[in-house]
Image (cartoon, rainbow, N blue to C red; front, side):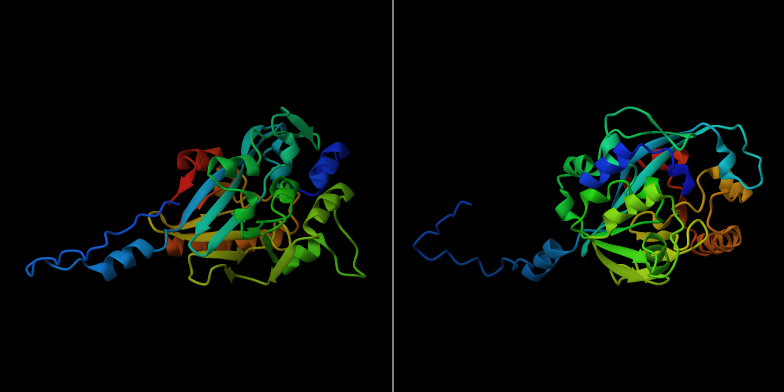
Length: 308
């Protein structure tokens, strides 16, 4: 979503966001020797199999619903004016043998169970469960999250940062500078959005520039594709069953936007967005990747909550 779309957020929402063995004894006598013709158990193979790392899996978290009452802002071409749509707001828990990465942080947790709330005049937002509650359903806590990374810094992707303060935040340097402008540069965001960004300040930040292999084995890669924001990124996964999967961030909000190459009016740079769209589509074609639009219910619902 765009920076200015947050101006209608009640300050109470911003403030609430920020506040926030048994032992068995062996017989004394020596065990009877096995008959000579009994094959030895393949101990090495059994141990290797037992210690094999779990395969890469992804849990899809429901991080909110966004009913848009006028889609005009979602196309600079002006062809969406007066249209409405319901978007999902998805987060993704990437479970890798070397750690867990949470991709995007959804809507503010204080919305959970509060019913639909209006934000920015055209967004009616709601949330059923917080990230913490959904982690509990998986037998996890926020302390089990090693890394957090954002596709970008808009309000519907950063809302529950207060729940994962102990994780390392992997962030594009251009996006970090958008959120925390270097001294001597002018802040360009709505003050309320900047207040939400401030919640990232205490976190350990691992700044990156460009594409980044999170676990060093090629299975989870953050790819910088700016335009929507200065450091907008997508996530490339190499899944054991699905093969290459691209989580598109906000490269596109809707399948129609992808088909028509529509650029939202609130994007940081339309020219850079179009360049990134070309790069994204070329990569998807080259890899034969499954593309998942994070706000598109038709892409999210068939997953059934898991990517393998």
